[in-house]
Image (cartoon, rainbow, N blue to C red; front, side):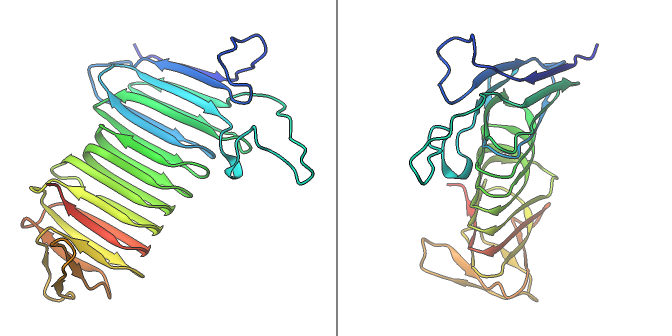
Length: 275
């Protein structure tokens, strides 16, 4: 039997325990999976706020939400005007929805005026589809699955992950470190403003496609660059070598495999080999 959990978190501070901050609403929600023996899928869409996802040993998806932390670089308790007056919050609520069906958990927040910051614990075998626009970073730790990560105004950090990833941000650094990579899954990493820095296992096999419009590409893998492409030249930067990036650079790592694309407009690209 499929389970359906459709919960609208509208939290009013009146009458609640005093453990809630005076200017921030906080809530913890546990969402059971329909079949905890199988991998899960988490989808999160925010307009304002950060998303932190951590793989854990439990079987449920545990969502911890905090409201209103950092719009325009200020907290709710710091909305001072030029005359020294402070805005009084008219309500502390989290406009957040969580829905579960067939091991797929969807979380969305529709607040345009207040950030919703999420820390979510998921089973380690869990694919992710995460998206936020303003006032927050996206971080993922210790998760095994297919990751689709999109940010607009903030960095992306993926740590100790397994599987595959497609990650893109506009304004922010993109950093990822893989414990293991999927055997046949193509991957892509890109940003417009920031550094792309990805660490793979030494045994990874890949066909790489690399380009930085206003930066350089560095790697400590022995990339077999196609002869028709610009040649790689060694530098003294910790044994890594620099690749000329007048156009797309195509090459192979460990005789080739699934495609890995990395693109940057303003910043360097680092393709690292795990030590």
